[in-house]
Amino acid sequence: MNTSRALNTVFLLAAPLLVAAADLSLIAAISLVGVLLLWRWLLVLASMIRPPRGPELILDSISASHYVEKVRWCLDRLGLDYQERTSGGTLGAFFLGRTVPRLRCKTGMVETSIGNSAEILRYLWGRYQIPLHPASEFLRADAARLELEQQIDRCGRDLQVWVYYHLLPHRSLTLQAWGANNPAVPAWQRWALRLLFPLLRVLIRRAFRISTARYNKAKLGVDDLLAHSESLLADQRRSLLGGEQLNYTDITFAAINGLWLWPAAYGGGQADAVRLPEEQRPLAMQADVNHWSSRYPLSTAFIEGLYHSERQAGQILSKSGND
Image 1 (cartoon, rainbow, N blue to C red):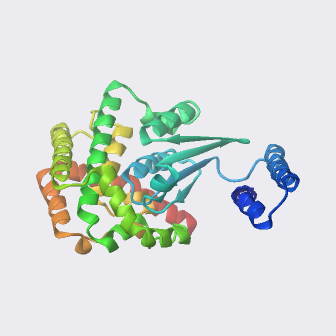
Image 2: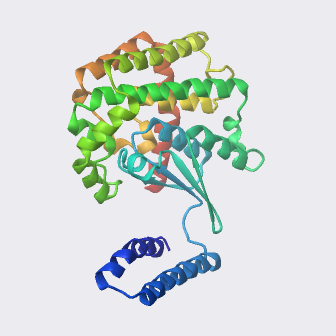
Image 3: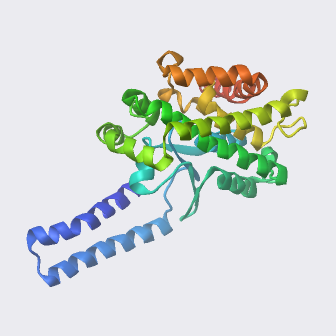
């Protein structure tokens, strides 16, 4: 069904060219439009009679995104069946107006699309909350959790500036992070990333206002969040907001800061192809990582511990179940 819709879109775009190339009469052009509209109507009827197969949930992503990792981790923790569709770097944002993460939810012939990680988590809680799905309790939101989530997400935007400040001068490293070498990204997108890199670099610099001053401000934003988490974790609590049970703010904190710490299980196996080994990172970038790791040991240990107990353990169980 997706192939039929794609062909329909191609023919709609090609129809004016066909009319011009064949020098069709007005009657012939109107007939062509009628055929295309009839085809589209038949596709709608077919989707009503036999809805397209596939998982109910589809996560549009780019592998290295910390906001995607936030949603991906929560989906995995719920144990939901979903399909991840990986795109190349910034192509979707700049050429299609589609940002990630984006969750597509199918109910019969109806498909709903939800963007922004916070809104996606509210949807997951609303749809899968207890008693429908007992594992969803960690997604319950209250005023304190929402406030902390907003603070962490703001730090996530600072980390985007931080990453691009360090990587954009290095073409190969940026392309690696964008998925130009990732087999999960469609081949044409991998080629497009390489061909359009000069333009994409300019667009990124303008969109994020990349400069030394902006980088210094972004780095202070990360420091502020880590200093706050360091004070919270000083009493050896298990969750940032207290209590013994983890909640989505803990996962959000680990996922967002995973972008600079890059634990072994970052991405739950979906980001391995875009990983930047420590020896390949720019020296100034690694110096920042070393600074945060040494200055905020409790926060660093909290992030690494969550990835080890939640993400890495989950990968091991998944692999053993497939053997």
